[in-house]
Length: 137
Image (cartoon, rainbow, N blue to C red):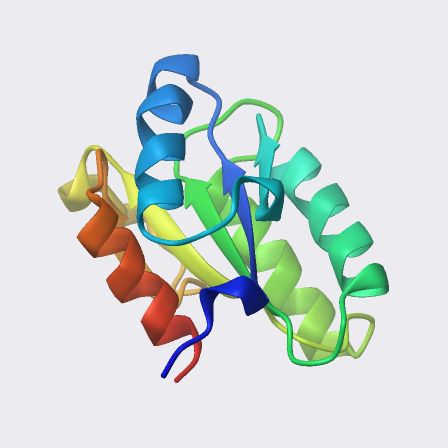
């Protein structure tokens, strides 16, 4: 059985409305609120990732929910940057990265393939729970 207490979630979303809708659904899916880290763009998400990877206990799974369109660094660029740092050896482990978008067609057309899966906005607690379970596989 999957232990959601081992999951740290980075939610990268620039629109406050979507953050406010997503947060309760992530909590209802079984993720503790203190395990959810909010970023307003991809750069903040990477900063959270760096901190979490440095401090995480063994067995911790890090999941990044990345909005496709954000200022400063969008979700595609963030996922690409993380994958490149893993490939170069400068990052030991790759988090489970989920692309989140209100426009799934756009995701299919623009995604660089660096995501592990895609989830449409706004998502339900059951879809969050499914994605968190997939992060363990």
